[in-house]
Image 1: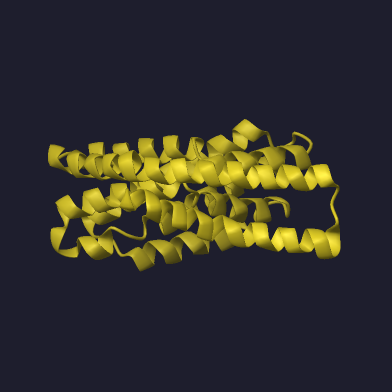
Image 2: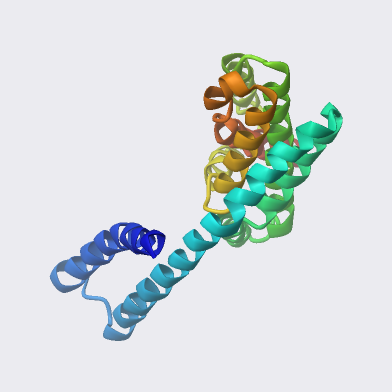
Length: 230
């Protein structure tokens, strides 16, 4: 019951300020048609209810199963299996990420179908998968987080010189949408599980950084798609 109360408070703290600002603007500046404003209020209620269910689901299922998978895979003693698990999980949670689908739909519409929705989703998912696998391998082998970040962003800025202009903003947005409500809890939980088993003494530091690395993958993947389109 206490968790439910905390969840309701978190959702209200997230939704009510936005609803309040839009309501103030409605009666002071924008004056949208009444039916549009009523649809907005209804959507606020639906979003709030959906977020409550989502956060409860995360607490009950996503976080525990992510940690269990992350803790179980290293016990097999096979590095390739741990990395493969990271690749697969990174791919499937990204395909299921609502934010990625919203971006892909918008890009498909704006580009007139030149950049297809499914193609963009697959490229973003592959980028996340590769970097989640790399992040898990970093925990296992103790690679420098800073070195991976520096090299990766150097590649990002290098590729940005060779891709069509319209792909650069799309690629950075693709990196942002992968830090959504589906991907982040699962990837963080996976990292916590892997780090706790393999590197117990440094689990607090090694558990994090996976989301930061995972967000670079889609940027590179979409830029590579831009190189192909060029």
